Length: 475
Image 1 (cartoon, rainbow, N blue to C red):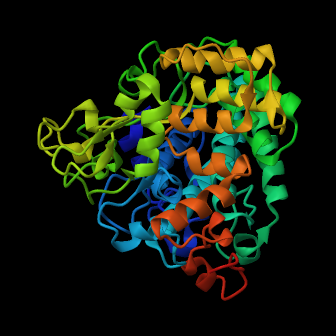
Image 2: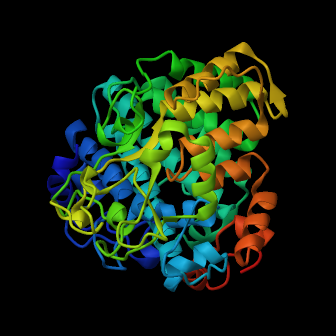
């Protein structure tokens, strides 16, 4: 899939390039447009692949580029009690200190990246009519809707009310582009898209949309809204019963790519500026575009040491060049350890090939417990305990569990999924964000307040709307 990027970009011309106010409907920079380009199923598939390229993001140091999922850790892990900056400087430190500004370029990058993904999905959906084979059209529709739902789900959890863009719109349609609708309306679209995806996909791929990925994501959507627990449980059980298995060795989850545990991952290839990523280098000390971001907090180290079992040694390490600091090791660039100094890599660390894991079986097993718990404080369900115990057994924590509390589950999710961009969303979903982040903030001299649970709408969007677009409280 990734190898086709140059073909995709050549064929699509400048049509899919995001730029400020135009990212929902960019102006073509060549004579090729979506209206003249798409004439066959093969050409529509290039549009599908372009959606994945949008998620993958551009591996560059150019602030005008969209970096897609490569910037997600700033908005998630670094706003939780899991990670922080090393230097406590610049825009990155705003996330750690809970003083994010509406002018923050990282926030703007992520917002525009994910609306550009939505635009790319809408372009595909707008051109399904050229496909003669009904089964192919259904498959491509399902794939595009899964990816649109994925993008909207991330955005709605981070920003709240959003513009609802469910079709290709004109650049002049500013009312649609800048009108924020209620989160419930966004969730309605997400659920509809994912139900379509479930009905039209199979489990052929791990780096493209699949039925299992759509089922897992829809289960998480239901849990996030605190509804349809029975449906969420059924969806998780369908995924668990599919052709998936936990990797025996926790480290292999991250360095044996597209393995039996992976449900959906964003694929990268090492050594190619067009298809690699630099986020894992940024987590090291002085080898990336920036350095010493997403460093592990003392709080996370304490929890992993106490409750991580075999996972701890594969989750963080002491910075080899600065022993008072701790680094994430789930995504060492290309799996290399950096040598004794933590900086020297055989391959170029800024052109890393590590895939980014979006969904894996361990996440679904723990969501299964959550769905059975159905918002309650505790469960002794044998089905829930079986799923929970599988995770702990793999971690070497084989003591039999007889009941699971909400706090037990949240803790297990923290140590199992540490540094995978789940912690912030988990705290919010479990109703623990206010208490946990307030305590963490007070202990570490940070500035958390309840309005920090949502990020600001980027100021450039407010400006482009000429004041029609509202800002989130606290900004």
